[in-house]
Image (cartoon, rainbow, N blue to C red; front, side, top):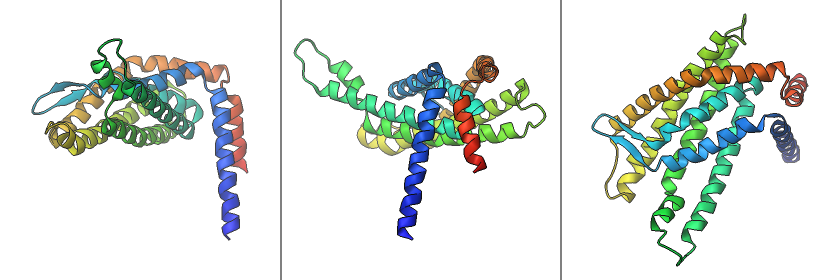
Length: 254
C-alpha cells in the first residue's frame, strides 16, 4: 500500500510539473510580468500607511493590488482557476526570492554613502512579508475559483460582457476584501504592537480598511476591466494557449 501511494504521489508531482511547464510556455509573458511585478510592488508599498484615523486605515498596497486581481481574472477566464493559482504561487515565490536578494543587499556594508534609509526599505519587515504572502495566496485561490464558478452560471453567453463583468466584479470585491482583512489583521493587530512600539490598527480599522480598499479596488477594476475583456477575446480569437488547454482537456477525459 505504501509503495502504491508513493508511485501515485510521484505521478501527481510529475503531472503538475508538466502542466506548469506547458502553461508557462503558453500564457503571454506580458500578463505574467505585470502580475509578478504588481505582487512585488504590493509587498513594498504595504510598508507605508497612507491614511489612518479612528474608522479607516489604508496602506500603499491599495495603489497596485487591483492590477494583480485583474491579471488573475484574465488568466482564470481563459486558462481556468487552476492555471491562475499556479501563476499566483509563482508570483509569490519570485516575490520571496526578490525580498531575499533585497535583504542581502541591505545588510552588505558600504562606506560610499549613508544608505540607512535605502537599507530599511530593501530590508523590509518579515511579518509584513508573512502577512502579504498568506493574505494574497488565500484571497487568490478564493478569487479564482469564485470567478470560475460565477462564470459557469452564464451558460447562454459565457463569453459576453455581462458574464465577464459579473464574474470579475464579484470575485474581485470579495477577494480584495479578504486580502486586505487577512493582511491587516496579521500585520497591524498581531505583530505591529509587539515590534513597532505599540503602533497598531484596531479590528474596526482593519475591517474598514478591507471594505474601503475593496471598494476602491473594485472601482479600478470597473475602469480597467474593458481592457481585460478585450485581452481575453483576443486570446480566444487567436487560440492562445491551445497546447495547455488541449492537454488539460485530454487529462480530464482520462
